[in-house]
Amino acid sequence: MAGKPKLHYFNGRGRMEAIRWLLAAAGVEFEEIFIKTPGDLDKLRNEGSLMFQQVPMVEIDGMKLVQTRAILNYIATKYNLYGKDMKERALIDMYAEGVADLGEMIMHLPLCPPDQKDAKTTQIKESITNRYLPAFEKVLKGHGQDYLVGNKLSKADIHLVELLYYVEELDPTLLANFPLLKALKTRVSNLPAVKKFLQPGSQRKPPMDEKNLEEAKKIFRMQ
Image 1 (cartoon, rainbow, N blue to C red):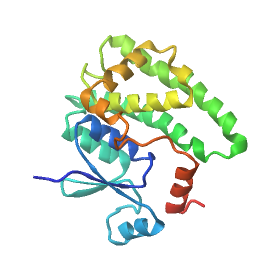
Image 2 (image 1 turned 90 degrees about the horizontal axis):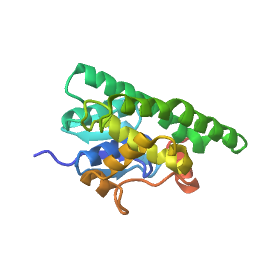
Image 3 (image 1 turned 120 degrees about the vertical axis):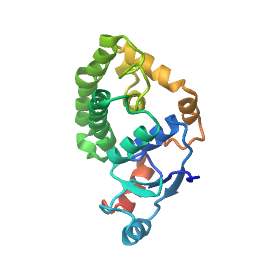
């Protein structure tokens, strides 16, 4: 029997958090091996564990997978969260890419110079309310179903709900005019595996604070 997936990353959200969410939603237990120093990262590189010299890296089914989207797609396929045919997978990919685009903006906000942060935050909020959330609300309204694709839970729903939590952290009022997205968030959050992941003490990571940011900069030599 294969062991639990092992996730190699620092103790923060970053590019691993979507992987944590997807595994948790699939009901898969996983281990985390935290990178705490630049030396820990060098060790992984030097032993040949990181194909492109970067993390996230996930050990699963005898493989050492890198590249976030490749990891997510493998997990989604393995646990039947990737649609029933090519057309559904194309839609799931399209929606997931939109989520990733907005997620990147939010993820990089803490790295923004202080004098630019207010303007950047305003720009992101406008993208959220005028561009991204209306598109997803329209999808749900268009087919009237509980989930984005095929009336069945997929990685697109999980990624989107994760993102909606980040949107609410940025500004709790941003979801006010999107009732179908609020309903999707509630629906997915109440799934037993997701509900467990949302409880205190789970492997879900908190928002990045100054301490966390400095730790990441040190590990990844961003200073």
